[in-house]
Image (cartoon, rainbow, N blue to C red):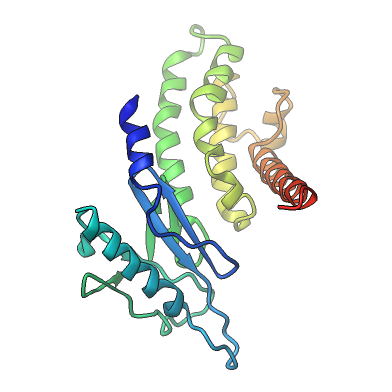
Amino acid sequence: ILAPLMYIFFISDMPSEAFEAMITSFYADDTSFAASDNQHKSRTKFVQDFLQPILVKLEKYCSLWRIGLNPTKTWCVNFHNRKSDDNSPRLYLNGELLKYRKSMKFLGITFDKNLSFKEHIEEIRTKCNKRINLLKALCGKNWGATPETILYTYRSYIRPILEYSSILFAHAEENQLKKIQAIETKAIKIAHRLPPWTTNTFCYGYVKFDKITDRIKNLAKDFLKKNAQDKGGCNGNGR
């Protein structure tokens, strides 16, 4: 119990920045720095002008408190929607040039350079399909758990995986969301012993909960609404 608290106190003064063009994220021993770049030719600052100084501060902080930094395990991702990727800033840590990846996992979420979340959704589908096998083991044609028990197991054991971080990919491409939808309809078919060719509309006639794609979109909407209200409340208090 004390170890996490002591660690929080230990890193409480670790260098961080938070303003319109840059954010810092800390969670346990995972740290990330992110900055945005304005593409206008008249801009006076580039993204490396934000990121390199914070890396220098991090080096000094870690040197003071004897924390090891490993540049070979530090990666960068340049998020963009262009075909070419020729504007990646050159960033250094402990004198070593940091390398770039096309995607990176942070707090269990795979961020790809286009923020399409295709890799992340594929990972979700693989993980959930393994758990779907448990539902198959719970039922048979003439024996096994009731549909209610199987669907309760789905909602408790599988759906949380689909919903984790869903506010990020709730409005992904339709063909990606269909992969999420297919997992839920597969669970419904197993629970009610329906044939594989049963349509989605027919499947949802058997259940009383919303479609998973509608659910994650509502979760994203509620999150953004609550976040806006929280910011409004802070402004109202003069902070």
